[in-house]
Image (cartoon, rainbow, N blue to C red; front, side, top):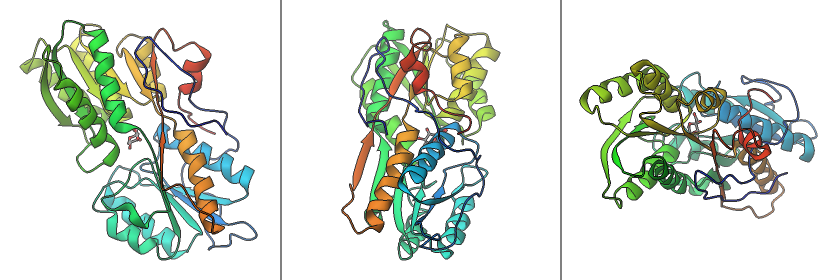
Length: 331
Ligand code: T6T
């Protein structure tokens, strides 16, 4: 597997990271075995995504499947249709009822999934991948990007894109998500230290691109001098790009988005978005399986693993490193 590393880069700098080739086929939805702790000869691992159809979790699934194939585990993959704890919770309950050896999960909410996960931990080893909960002490491992650092890096990118400063907006998913809240916090701490910038606040698009596009339109009416937007995940960034396009302010308002799905890449190519922050979902998934298997063998696990990110711009997009950092659409 590829080595995990933290990369705090400037917009101009792009370092190696990203997505290695995925191993086996299979899209999101329920696949593979969920038949108890043994999974036949191999241990069974259930991966519950934050939401299906999100290239970040598709890439993570590729890492999960590759590790399972290399290290010997049966895998099932499923997730909610929408980012919604009320939809994810029943999936967790039904998966837990089958008593898989381990569950890898990206919880949709820091508090709503706390108790259900504590219950599930009575049947299975729990590895938190990407997001976490308020008190993750039941988990054998937590693996996530440096989200706080990623938020700060997003602001550094904006500083370089808008050296004279001005008004900046953040578009987030919704409150209660550990990852994107940390990105917002990292961004807010950084913007608060630069008096050239006026932070006009965070708005929530609920993982809906159309909502994010509306936020851009409404914000531009109120703040016609808006200089930059930080969009904290795939769907906020996708919608921010649409809003910029619709308002005819491409290149006038700079956009930095988290994640590197195909829509972000298209937006980078056409100049609607100036920089994207690619996480390492493949590595998170791969390492999630490694930690789960260690725990099932009674070996010690790493309680917390932090993975890095790569800032990709139009200039670095076509480099090998830029291409390697992009998310997968299938394994
Ligand atoms: O940004 C990722 C993930 O890290 C976050 O927790 C939720 O949104 C994504 O899946 C991207 O859509």
